[in-house]
Image (cartoon, rainbow, N blue to C red; front, side, top):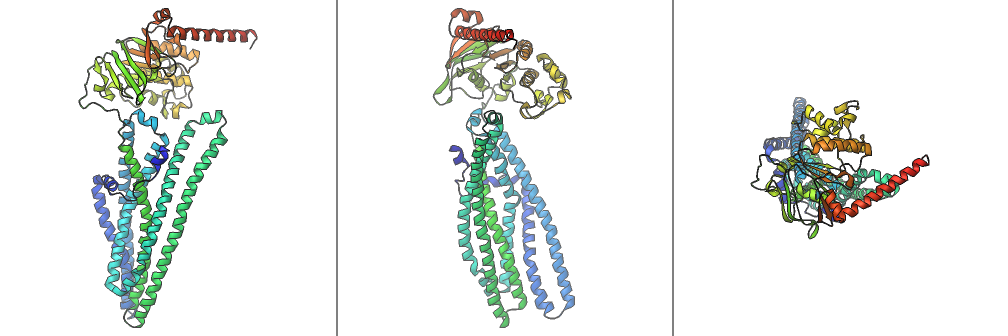
Length: 604
């Protein structure tokens, strides 16, 4: 429900504060704006000049049978049209160029801001909604900057020039022409109100579609393995139908409004012919003026229709900007200190002092945790699911900030370090490895030019990744698809180890890093890990206790509290939580062993 409310248009159709903020993006391109205004005034004048020239042709040259004068006025008309087309080209080009530059700046700003947001923001915000902000909502602003604002000014200038020419020729006929305007204003008011309601629904259901598509494409393997395609397809049909129906309602109001405008146009022409024709018969008005007025009426209603369309663009831009600025104003950011400490070279001593942490207020997942890791030491953290193991990693890397206590690195509170400086010394290898679209090489160095080919290959060779990479057709230049879809789980894990080593961190964190690989690959990785851990402060989170028996210290977490601490033998001797966990895993391994032996004896 919160997501739906966020995607609704709850603000005004026109908000001066939002518009002022939007126009601030135009400031760097003032030259384009100035040029557009000048060209607009010129183009707007050239259009209404044509009916006036037609009036001159009829009253001066046709009436007097002046063929030479008629040819001359025809050439002038052709010249005006050609010049108007020439100016229109530059106007369109420069306004579109300005719009694209502004949208480029805005997209860069949004993406940069999103990268600064804390993980807490992504915990509560669907990815589809954020993508909608950067794509659909920015596109709505693109339409406004590239054509909407400029064409609104162009239409207004055209109307002003038409009124100037009309009143200069005949004030009574001008007033007759404008007599239908009050009806138009009332119809436009109703149209705007109805379109605003339907447009709100269109944007809401579009955001739902984006979120639903993103979520289900990402989790397609789950949908397929549980044969949920039909059910999920029905849900998608429902959301899609709501989006379709909202668009149809919007189209209905346009289908009613535009023919009504055409009807008013016909009424206005009828009034001109009735009143103006009578004036021509009575010799109070020339035929050329009557003919020019008919042309002006046709020309007058075109920008009126365009302004109604531009209202829709403006309304969409207001709604989009409201959501975009809400994202840009989001302060879910882990703050850097105003005067950060800049250490020369951290040794890697970590200390947790009475640390308590909650993702949600007062719901603490870590409670008064204290421990110390000396430089070069390897500690392991064990415990049941939900014990707080991963939370320790999240707060050490400052993905989240603690509520109580202190975490120090070489005696410095990590909150006094710039986040980029802190994370420069830390590398994390997760169970769920994320690979980007690109190559094997780009997924190891992540575009860091300081990691040359020599360092990259050395890192891959150290962790054993070179064995499968060298067998690829393009080796380190082998293309990698999104999330590493063409690679096995073990291969992706080896690449993540090579990535961690290539960055040469002082502190290494392994979070269930070998739990998803087969025994052979695990042995390969374990050999790499042994080399990787040398000279580094290391934290290893593991469910399989057999992988962390050589750790210098093992921390046993239970329900957010540190219950036991010591090496493997010391913890077994205590016969506490660690001893029970070890016994359970030992029994499980024995059962698996017996099953395998039984199957082998049966020849299976």
